Length: 194
Length: 101
Image (tube, rainbow over the protein chains, first blue to last red):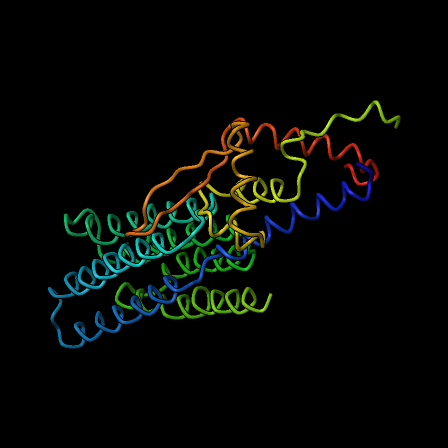
């Protein structure tokens, strides 16, 4: 073994790690699904406010969130069966998504059902968890753009405190579009080109 | 550095295919045989031979099962394999002292 051969072996190791990383990278499909679903739920929320059917708002969110969770579980299971390699990065990201999903469910739907706090508290709490999820995903996949988006979500959660409780949920729309869907779309395009 | 100061390279890992297999398995919990074959760009027979050597050395665990009606072979890195790969990398670094940080 000489220096040249050693360098060639190091290059081979790097190439194999890179190939595995690229072929098992996050597709972003579930991100797009959840972003669109929450926008639809917000539209439903304000349609019910407009129609003065306030009792239906909790049901509206429950239906959308549970439908989303069932679809996500089904989609992930199907992907798991299809994928030929399960990397530790994917496993970490999946566990994080489940943990944050449980956080959204408990803080956004279960606690309000038991009237632990006013509904005006839900949007800032949800934005904080979304920030944690994006920051961690950004760290796991080494996507710094997502870490900046997480900061926007945390700023958004603070900004919500300046907005009247009836309109706090509307703050989610620019956050979802500019600090969730757009960066995921950019990262996906970059990954496809690479 | 005199040649006798270099750490010896593990002969089980010192092969292009086996090194590639271990590099892929390093970041994955489990990998299917077909994925290894496609990523490395080798044949069924060649990969099987190299996997057997890695399995005999206790570096890789090979599990045979079924995916639907098709036979499925999945591979994963053992603790012994992870240690051996780590030692191999350290030994490899000795040959390129300038790039060592």
